[in-house]
Image (tube, rainbow, N blue to C red; front, side):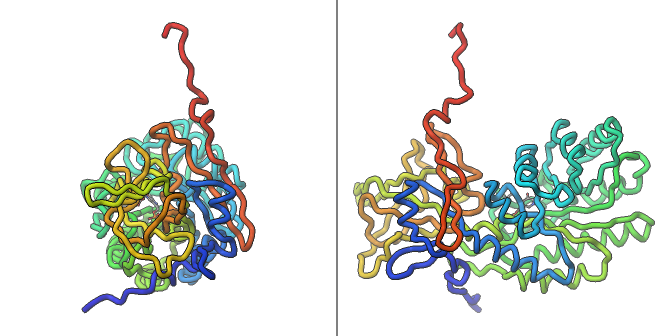
Length: 429
Ligand code: LLP
């Protein structure tokens, strides 16, 4: 039985053609490409808020704290948009913590995960009074205890458990298999919870799980939550107090024609497991909120035809959007001018970076493109700009936020001078 494929446009209502031009909200993307230049990331404020609210609404009976996963998009304007809507933040480094605090996020709504927190990061997190640190190993727990003691503070922590669930997603973004570096096994965690007296400066009252990313169906979430809740109930029976459960992020989105669970379906699957548990629920979505809230605009530099192949050589490379090269990820490509009546051709859409792996799309059927034409790479709002690099000494792209018929640059394009800032040549060279 074939799965019902929902029309892609249902999910991307703020990126659409109107009288032949591709718009983000009420702004023609061609206008942004022309005025700001390419490559440029463009985000829709309306979509960001709609996705945040959709998720929040679906789970409203639990009144969860949604902590947006800053790693998926850490632009200050994006973070501020979400903070204003009431979102908290999931951070994984001192840098992300700095960003969240810089936009005035409430420290009580910040959670800090990462397998390798440094002493300096732990100290800052404690001093800023964030909600909790999600701890991934026993040595880390010892270190936090030590630092908490030195600062004479009691630190709220959660143990990140590995529920050993295999999520059907790219193996690079699976995180809860038994061989994964993330999290602590239930057996190890049980030992820790039964020896809380060893950690007088820790308030170990939380449990955290995150089983992977771009998960399209609810089954792995259900398995992971069920296992974790029964683990918690077991601890409670033995007199151990658990106040909150962080169920992580990982909700998949539509890139092509896959069928992604809706927030309502996700909620329907996990709510029965979480209701009446007297647990404060935390969520850490990244991609679900930002993925389809953003596009990358780029321009065709050359059309190269060789050995029976057609290449669109474009001004955005793997340094701008690495997902196709790194995961073989599919991102839809749409011309900014509608393509009615144009012939279709099969192209490799490649960047200028000196690597064969530098491509945005391979063997893609697209309307015939011409030199100088710009196009949008869809679903690039999450894990797009944040994974960009300066490889080949390419300045990183600009970022733009759209709201209604307004748009503004929220990160200027890097300059060539930015690239060498901080470098110096010793006299002895
Ligand atoms: N919480 C934790 C502990 C995580 O490690 C992650 C993502 C999230 C939340 C947010 O997951 P999301 O809701 O966005 O799926 N670069 C890859 C994705 C890596 C995800 C890493 N962890 C990609 O481009 O697909």
